[in-house]
Length: 231
Picture (cartoon, rainbow, N blue to C red):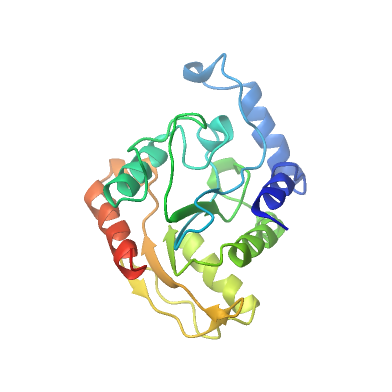
């Protein structure tokens, strides 16, 4: 199967009734600032360079970000912070992520998430995560050049390790999440050494507005990723 075929399967997925109901309800009753806009209101595929050496892994689309625009980390403050970091590290041709047709082009990086639909309160249920993990597994198999995974937030970080253990690719413990830390793993997946993992706080508005994550901090993560990937 091609990435395009996988993405078509993701977009048409209705495995999680609660998430289907929520993503559509959000679209039908948007906040005032988005009234009159047509929401995507479907699951989101990953996007970027299919030959990427760096994979960015997030939690899930935002209700009024990706769920509205149809592209991950697009149309909200998280997307703005991430786009600036990618641009400054040479992974993107522009420093903003506004809409699917804004001209953003990624090079050597691919962006995806553990869960493909916006969950209420940004908290997917355990079975909803389970329903989505096969899509991430297939992506990892198709993105054959990935040597670095940037995990945005503890949830994405720990889920990646759990998935590798489930696939018998990694038999160690899940390490402690520390922003900016680099984890070089022993093991193999899809016939290749496991990628190096870099942990980052999620660029959520809560983290950036409180100063827990600054632009300089996330910029540093992607400069590390570039260096480790040999770019």
